Image 1 (cartoon, rainbow, N blue to C red):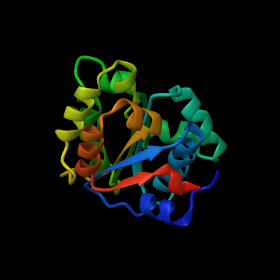
Image 2 (tube, rainbow, N blue to C red):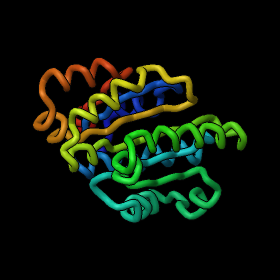
Image 3 (cartoon, one colour):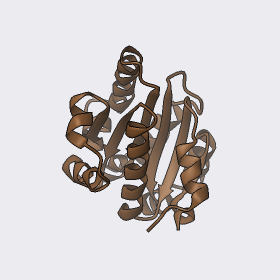
Length: 187
């Protein structure tokens, strides 16, 4: 599977302060997305990369990034790469754990003279716990334009998005994100 030029362009040339959405077809596509974005964010753009994973373990993400010749140990040890399980980030205590982490990473990015933060966050843990209503409320609480130097991409597996959310909820989420990219255009 390869990303088409337009899709990769939309991802790589997203702007800071954007709250975006990706609807992906399968885990293989999501892996390619986060691996390619991570490589460029870490090695070329001087960004902090945050990956929030649902349908695979953080260790699986690390292994995938290593297959793309990313020095995972180096970037994790210097704080440029952060990989967390979405259950810990979104389902413990309250849903705002990831947002608080992003705020802390923004402080680190500024202190370390980084360009900003690139975030790929899979929202699947809300579906695992049957919290679709809370998911929509959480997403609607975050504006399309953020005052953090962040390129944010909320990721949804197409089955979660189209089969578990009502048409109204789907419209609300699409409207509330700066841009929506469907992984079917990645082929």
